[in-house]
Length: 128
Image (cartoon, rainbow, N blue to C red; front, top):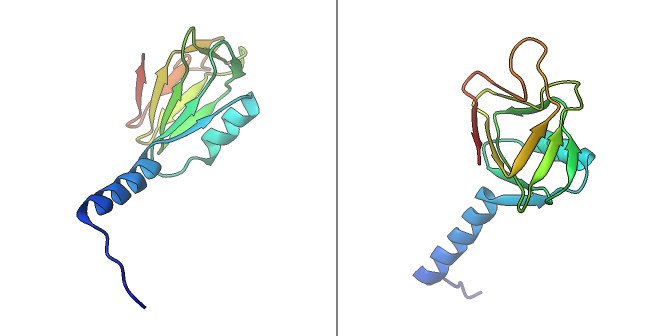
């Protein structure tokens, strides 16, 4: 059996593709249930981007961003996350990182501390 070796340029391309797949996973989200399920299923520190269509509204009650790197991204006028006057939208802790890009947070509240987003224990939030 003849072994094949990769040329240096093919090796770089393969490594780049593997790194790109591992470090830039993105997923379109259509419903509140999909949003909650997608966030709950993230594990490890590989960044995950969830794409929320502009104009959509999602219920966002007590979403935990612990030990994960999560970006919620929309475009145009942005998407809305609604806490429905029940709780804060996000709890970001344990080194978790949350980035919100064109995302509006409404009707969120904390029981004691925090409002729409409660950041603690090494958590980090960026909004744009």
